[in-house]
Image 1 (cartoon, rainbow, N blue to C red):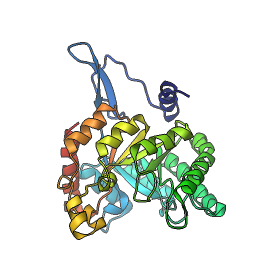
Image 2 (cartoon, rainbow, N blue to C red):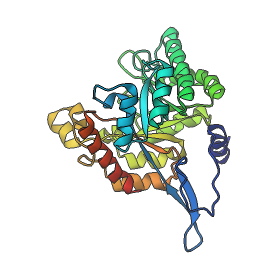
Image 3 (cartoon, one colour):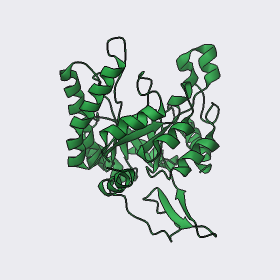
Image 4 (tube, rainbow, N blue to C red):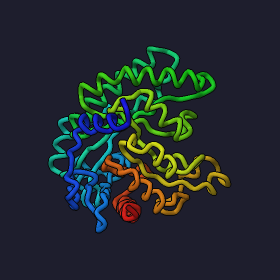
Length: 313
């Protein structure tokens, strides 16, 4: 499958609606529109809606009221860990009452039972869990499951992780095809797939339009620049996670201390990052916060910070 065919089939399977190149309006149900500038050249306008992790809403409220709070603070979506801890009927009822969307979920078993594990039974456990997440996100009205592709450590070599995780992801493809949902691999601190070129090759070798990337903008600042990753991964990026990172805090106070900085206060060059998102014509439609949560005042601040970041599009 060549690149043109890959993109076309991905659009068909994911249900992306084609938009007339003469239209300049952005439909809120889509992530981009194509229009012609004064010189007659096609340009793409990118739109990103804001989402946040469900665990970030730290107020003692019912599920419905948590969703309503998120909506009132300017968020359009909420991202659950999956398999979910709430009855599905309760989530769907709260979704209907609040008007919130549930575009994606994060599988919660890919660390404890990684797809790269040498033990096939451990890999099967994760495969079953991700398959359940694919069914759940479809029922929730979303389209994407975030999956950590594997973990390299003193007991699992890099090559072994590469082979095992690709094999496990290929075993998941029938579940993705059955549900029509996407498997989006995320860059995390797992000692694995440490460059954008390698991450691109990993997905291309699997070569399926329902397998792509859930790019975390903040996670790569430890050893790279997110704009480089965005341009290299390009249309393979299905969704975007947002967080901040300070190399100065990392160097002076400790590795993970680098995350202890507010959005817009770290080392992300947001105008440059958003320019890269615009350049690739990103169609994932969502920017999801994965930062420390809090009460409504704290979440409102995050919402405003995300507005400023999105404004750079």
